[in-house]
Length: 129
Image (tube, rainbow, N blue to C red; front, top):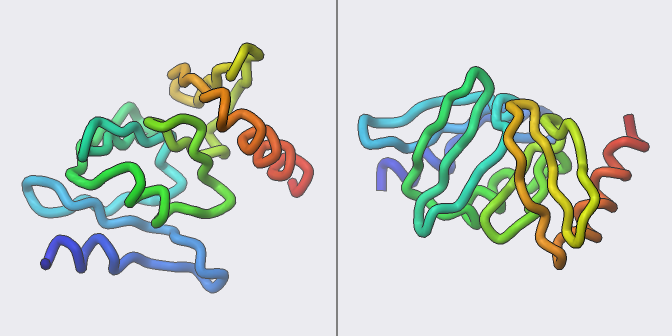
């Protein structure tokens, strides 16, 4: 119960955008800045967070939980097992679904069924900058 409250009690800016996130870990919790998240990867009922500075944290919550929490203009679900921070997107490589290259050099597949929504999201983000 306490970890669930920590998970849900996060800091928001005036526009209701999440700026920090308390991630429950085995030792307690780790507070991170949302902007430091490069991508999240599902692993069953767990989620790996890949952060700036090559940090990787395993959390015992599903990717769907984090997709709901991080469901802002900054994050996009590009695959059943991947949620990316568009601000860390460095390259899109064409293909059936394609691939993205993130700021840490990682390459992630884009699911064919997620490609159209992803492309709209990226083009919308670029045109709003």
